[in-house]
Structures are given as C-alpha cells and as structure tokens.
Image (cartoon, rainbow, N blue to C red; front, side, top):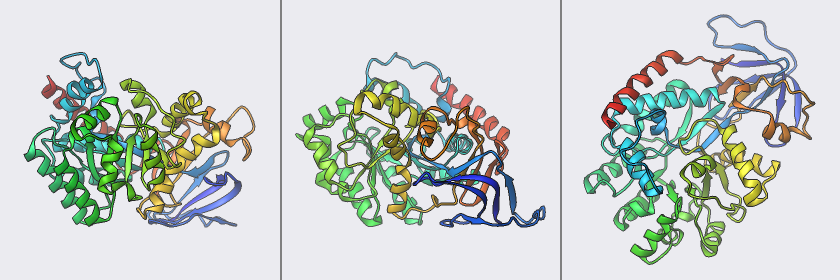
Length: 426
C-alpha cells in the first residue's frame, strides 16, 4: 500500500530545497518518504498502491491547524442573535454559548465530518481542536475522533471545561476528559478561559494534566475582560494564575490568543515551556485587538479558532497584520505556519509524520525556486492549488476529490443537522 509520486518537484518543508524525481510514500504513522530511481509497474487495481502523476506539480509537507473549534462548523448563515453584541462578552453570550448549548451528538458528528472534509481539501491533515457542547458532553470527544478518522485526519482533542453552566456540567466535562485520556487517546486537558474556570476546576484540571502527562489547552487573555476578571476575583493576572498551577512548565501546554499580557507575563511565558496559538482572523472578527508575539519565546503556531479550515489563509492574515504589529517577514510567518509540526513531534504526538503530503497544482507566472519559495508561499500559493493530499501514507484527496467518504453525503448530513440546530436556536 505505497503511493508513488511520478516526476514530482519535492520541496523539503524545513530546508526548502527542491528535488525533481520519483518518490515512494509508505503507509503508517511515522514513515518517511524516499526518492526512487525507477517506478514499479502499474499497480493492480486492488493492491492499494497508487501512482500519482506529479509532472509540473509541487509536493511538500501537508499542513496542521494549531487551534480549531469544529463545533462552529454549522454556524455559517445561522439566525441572527437575540441581541446585537456590543463587546466580546456579549459575542460569547449571544452567539457561541447560545450555539454550543444547543448541540447534540449528531450535530457534533456532522460538524466534525464537514470540518474534516474542508481540512482535507485544504491540505490540512492534523487538527488540534478545542470542543464545547455543555449539554452533550458524554462521548463528544470520541464522536469527533471517529469522524476525523473516517475522513483521514489526525487529531489532538480536548473538551473545554468550564464553570459557566454550573457544577453538574463542570463535572461532566471532567469525566469526559478523564474517560477519553484513560482510554488511551492522545489529547489535552481543555479549559475555556480563566474567567469561566474557578480555582476548584483549575486544580482538578492540573491534576488530570499530571496524571496523564499532558498539557492544558485554554484561551488566555483573548479579551481584556479576562484580565480584569482575574484581577478582581483572584488579585492576579491570568498568566500568574496559570503559572502557579505549574501548567506552564509542560511542553504540551497550548495557550490560545495571549493578546493582553503585560511585560512580566510575557517574560514568564517566554521562560516557560508552553506554546501559544495565534488566530488572527478571529481576533479581527471579534475586535479584541492584536499583539506583538516576538517576545513569547518563538513557540508560536497558527490556528483558525473555528473561523474556517484553511491554514494558508490563516498564514496570510497573520502575515499582513503582523507587518504592522511585529515587523513580520516571509521567514517569520513560514516558521510560525510550520511550528505545529515542531510542537507535535517534540511532544511525541502521533499522526503528523513525514508521509503527510500535499500535491500543489501551482503554475506561477514567474520562476519558483528555493530562494524565492517564501514569496510564492505568501503571495501565490492558495488552498485552491491543493490537488491531492496524503495523510499518514493514505491518499485521502485525489484530484480535488475526497477518497475516504462521499463528499455529497457529508454535506447533505451537515445541512440536515444545521437546519435542526438553527431551529433550536430559534
């Protein structure tokens, strides 16, 4: 079950060196791609092997999403909120918390399948997701896991535990997290944010992190109100509160946003082992501000925050805004775009090996070479150029068509569940 790439221009995702030739892509987690002198004969129809003609195409490492919310997939075109939000807290109250409270497991499944479909067709083969469905918690993570795996997308999941819906819901979140990790699934311990997680919940979350040797995945200072709540309630800022629990000392810890940090918090974060996920378009959409990430220790990766499943789009947004906020250049944004691989490999997470590849049908009007590839990355290459996608050595997208499931069935199911959700939103 090997995939052969014929006449490919293979671009090393780290060195950006170009190699022309034929390549063999073996199946399975952690396998490596090798250049071969000669292709085998045309494979038998049911052998599982395939030869992709990549003449005139670019092949490189596929992409990863460092912070997603698949539960928002059915929100496109949803009914207007009961009140037009005037600030970030009202955006949460009238839009996202209203939506997540009305999800059931079938809606979650539809969201996961559709999101995985979009990820696959955009060249994204690994997703770090942060899930919320306070009245459909039990088995929600397994539902997402199974849907992702049907499509062929690898994953690192968590449930965003919170106190905002009461003690009973909080305890169900803890139970779901514990059950998922105890079952041997790779995952993180999710919290919504400091302002919705009391001390008891934070202590219990830290205990789960210690027990399962993982990290926390939490929104941090996405809006200034998170800091104001922390100061008023606990007499300290958010990073200080997290630092005191020890979770910042774990290299698997992933902090989303981190926009409103002061100098001392930035120094603590820089000296820690935690990673930060940046989602520029979401920050712009929610009008919560921007920041300079340069002094966060270099451990910055990119996400979408559930806005979409297109990491090339996220990279461009971070680049264009970053030129004004942190003197962003081509090299910086490409490193940030690829940091998800370093986060996953350095923490021994499975599913993001070298045999995760994207074939780009990119025919530029100017020369492309190792010296100018980053200029093409920022100003030329888009998700529309994704022709085929290989995930862990499995061909999941061929010539822009999903191979693992029926696209029309996924989207029909999503529309059915979307209509049911919207009816509940009322």
